[in-house]
Amino acid sequence: MSAGSGKIDPMHQFEVQTIWNGFQLGGQQIAFTNSAMWMCVALVALWLFMLGGMKGAQVPGRWQMAVEGFTGFIDRLLKQNIGKEGRAFLPYVFTLFMFILFANILGLLPLGVVGVHPFTFTSHFTATGVLAIASFLIVLGVGFGRHGLRFFSLFVPKGTPLPVLFLVAPIEFVSFMVRPFSLALRLFVAMTAGHILLKVLAGFIINAGNAGAGLGIVVGLPSFALMIGVSALELLVAGVQAYVFALLTSLYINDAVHLHDHH
Amino acid sequence: MEADSIKLLGAGLAAIGAGLAALGVGNVFAAFLEGALRNPGAAPSQQGNMFIGFAAAELLGLLAFVVAVLLIFVA
Image 1: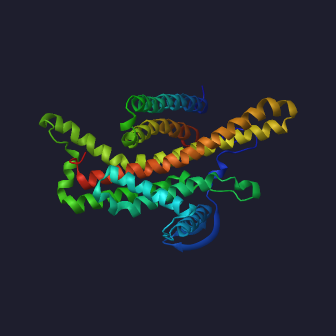
Image 2: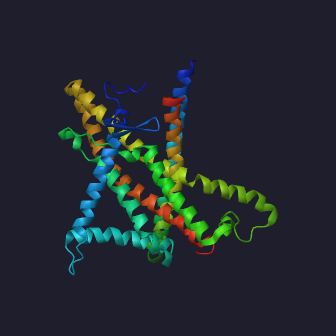
């Protein structure tokens, strides 16, 4: 089924492979996989990036400007969406944004040329699901912590007539409960779809090139041009998805902090 | 028809949803640009709202992709 385009299998890149067998825990194999390895790579890359820019020099160099650009960007995002209280959530949202951004971009790096095949762990529902659940739990914790049971008034928009309320409250409840799924699904599907598209186009180029000069020029060259464009688009998507994840998280936190009162 | 071929047809039909989401996403950015050109001063403060609309429109297109993948690999 999956071997649609010649010998190239576009789904193979998403396979989780075990690197180190690990240990047994409660009957489950806890193994070190390529997914876990690339999470570590993202962590180390992010750590190095931040380390280079956190010198706090009076006159910031280029690197420090880059890091401060990111922190300022997320700070403004939170100030716009949550207001003054948003500062408290800066560490979480910033971590989330940078981790997803680095993961997405690391997965796009053309390291296959030197034999290292990057694995985009954000293209797996398990990874994005955990991030979404973390956001959701923070929303619940902040909401119930600040407002107690009054948090349930989130499902009751102000000024709704009583008969309509019976319709609106369940809809609001469902839309609230669906949030972590939509958050995780968006990131995972966007990354999966992009990587499949890139792999299928790469399959076109290689198969056309193998089929001879004629097909190589008629099919391979346009595919190659298209692939360059799509790669640029994927870089954009990698950034936009990280931004959208952070933006929606901050919106949900705003709901928890202010219920419906604030803007 | 066999069940397998109907599944593939369904997956192909699901791709229509991706095209419709393209219309939706294009509409979000077109409307934003139209408004931004009329009132450039207010544009930067509304960028976040634009991305919320973009995210909502995009999600429905991605769901079409999920349906197609489910039909091919799972169903």
